[in-house]
Length: 69
Image (cartoon, rainbow, N blue to C red):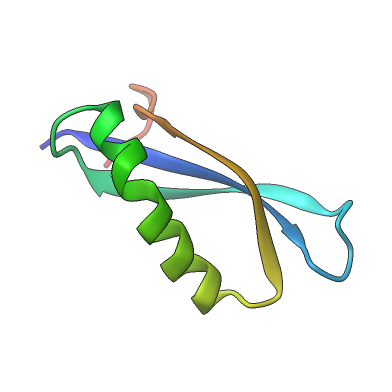
């Protein structure tokens, strides 16, 4: 099973200078392009579950070979 990461850069709404990355892992259903088409829905869902955080940017990547899944 191949995995694709949806990497979110998120910041606290109350402190926009406090940011970090959050990685969501998904089963690869084709390519990075398909991840990019599906990402907005996943970002909206994540945002609803984390109301104190704001997504400032995102990207789709393949995980590094060093990560055990």
